[in-house]
Amino acid sequence: MSESSAGKIPAHTANATGTVHTASAAHTALALKARALDAADELAPLRDLFALDDASVYLDGNSLGALPAHVPARVQDVITRQWGELRIRSWSEGDWWTAPERIGDRIAPLVGAGPGQIVVGDSTSVNIFKAVVGAVRLLDTERADEPARDEILVDATTFPTDGYIAASAARMTGRPVVPVDPGRVLGSLGPRTAVVLLNHVDFRTGRLHDLPGITAAAHKAGALVVWDLCHSAGALPVGLDAHGVDLAVGCTYKYLNGGPGSPAFLYVAERHQSRFDSPLPGWNSHADPFAMDQAYTAADGAVRGRVGTPDILSMLALEASLDVWDGVSVAAVREKSLALTDLFLECVEAYAPKAGAGSVVPLTPVAHAERGSQVALRCAAAPAVMAALIARGIVGDLRRPDVLRFGFTPLYTGFAEVERAARVLGEVLAAVGDVADVVEVSDVAEDPLR
Image (tube, rainbow, N blue to C red):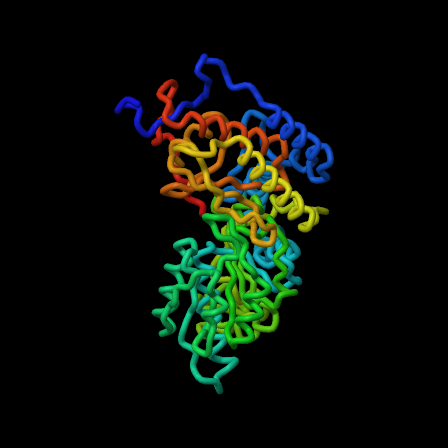
């Protein structure tokens, strides 16, 4: 390899004679299997609801979901009619004011929550802050007669913002943060544990953590749990109410397809709501916000999670995007998600080199009970490989230094697409180190959305 081509790989792969690799019998069998799965897929018609094309395979819905095709017209109505014509009247006539709770109630069934427990607004980071500080305050008020609990257990492998926010909450509440590997949480719970903050699905590896088991164990130890659902909401059953979850936070721009920067949501279990003391008591969460009272009186229910004036354009784009979920079973979504990721792992095993610079190691668990809706592969040449994939129409993302991530959104991802993506990945991996028709590593950037 010449010095000028170091860190680059071909955008198109060829064998020694210059002709494109021909499909083997195994490739043909997997392609036929994918077609059969597509033919039997009850969710396949939902793809037509999204603004997608057949020129590329979009496997980055775990960072930013695809655009539902009807959303632009709905947003245009918000801008031209509701804002442009009704103007201030839209807060009442357009139901803008109640949007955070109304949209929360639409998300609720997708995460296994009853009505009146989810409010939409603010970012994931802001809602994590509310939830962690609120959980500590709940513990202080609910168990004031017990010895003080002074530790906040935090997923040591968490998405960084969760750790940053937890550290700030710890400084505010006077409780230290204790980083713990998710696999060791059960053994780390004890009489000093106040709150546990965990990701339901690991953002790097796609590992699904045991929400029911950890929640039950934390409660038995006398602690409360805050779950980050960013990589599970809209991808798999969560069961917030069924499993007795205390508080949870999730984003809406991944599997819920709410759009870039769409507002996050906060879940506060009904049993905790009357004592939930938000660290950000804005005027929107006041019992009578338009009284303009200088003394704060918290509203009842999920409204306590509101802070300031909601971002209406993003909020109503999210509301429109949720229409694609009408009549869709989360159980069916999970079944397809596992089938998609099973097929991808099978194809990668068949197509990828077994050794050398182009080999990959799956980081995502094989066991269904431990797998979210993404597949992560460790690859020494990850940045260059992802650049070449994107150049060939296979859109995933990466996490430095060496993790390729592929997200599978059952509402619009097909099985033939999965086989195609794995086949192209195998060709790209086989070409690591070649010098012709190169793609610069700098051509691919890390996805900023988790």
